[in-house]
Structure formats: C-alpha cells, structure tokens
Length: 248
Image (cartoon, rainbow, N blue to C red):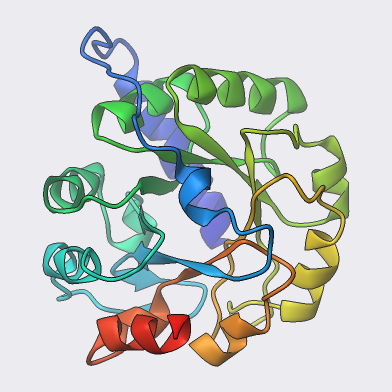
C-alpha cells in the first residue's frame, strides 16, 4: 500500500512540474557507478537519508540530516541517497540542503515516473536517479533511462524479481538496483544474491533493500557492488564509526 501511495504522490508531483525551466541544467560531473563499482569483490556503502520508513517502521522525524550528511562526507562512504518523498517524511528541498554541504555523489532516492522529474533532479544536483521497473511500461523505462544518461546521471533500475530483470534495459551505464525484502521490510539476502547472479558482471549492482545491521551487509560480498544503508546509520550514536568498522 505504501508503494501505491508513493507512486500516486510522484504522478501528482510530475503534473505540478510540467513546464519547469530547463535552460539552467548542467550535466552531472560525477559518475555514480564509478564510486560503487568493485566487480562485486567488496561492498560499497550508500547512506540513505530519510525521516520515516513505513516498510521497516523506523522514524527519525527530528533527525538533522544535513549535519549527518556533513559527518558522513568525511568517511569512505561511496555515495548518498536522499529521499524526496512525503511518504518518507521528506521533500525535494532536502535534496537541495544535502547537496549544499556534501561532496559525495548524490542519488535522488525517489521513484521518477516522468521525464520532468529527471530535469528537476538534475537541477537539484542529483548524479543518479531511481527508475521503477515494476510500475512502468518498458517503453517509458527505456525513455527515462535515455534522458537520464543524456544528463550524465546514472539511472538506477528499481527491480524486484527475475521477470522485471529480464525486461529491464540492463546495460552500461545503467545500474541495477535490487529490491528484495522480507516481510519486516529489510533485505532478503539469499533472494538478493540469487537475483544478482543473473546480472552480467560488467553491470554495477546495488541492493536497494536495507540490511538489519552491517554484519548482514557483509553477507552481500561477492554478489553486489553496493548496499544502501539507512536504518543502521540513523539509529547509531556514531554512524561514522559504523562505516569505518565495516570498511576495515
């Protein structure tokens, strides 16, 4: 149900964005996949910034995400993923605020369902965007990927199962994002590993579904290039130490 609300929110957002000025758009200068690519020999971490997660039940409504982004900027984190969806207690302005303080590659961690949202994302400084394969027809997925690449942004394909993987445009420079979750909203490691094994080795693969802890993230080594972590860092008293311990 949350996913349905999320899609509805994005369709309404796209309607409101129609006609935005695009003459100020400058292509991204950061290759999002370059910061994650490891040939699946290691797992790069992507910090997910959000205030609410209906899937896992987490809430951090008073979290200072800008200060957190600044703190994480001094770590060996691969990238930041900033939600801009109201269902996650966020807005597009949060993307603006994080971009102002961070030097890391930045993904708009939201469901982009219309071309205009890609322009809006790039205007706000995004280097990568999330494109849902589940809800969109193949032609639209292809078109959105083409537009993202034309803006030098990485399209991260939001894929939940083998059928979606087989019909998605899995090719460089696109990134495959696997959304394999358990009923508690956290990652299904075995399903993620099995699905990742079907992706060609030269394509960067990330897990969009979050681990319960970083020990669980380590189980993805050899299967994916990167893993999104949100709850783990948001509930930690010293998130930078969590990252350092994992990378060590």
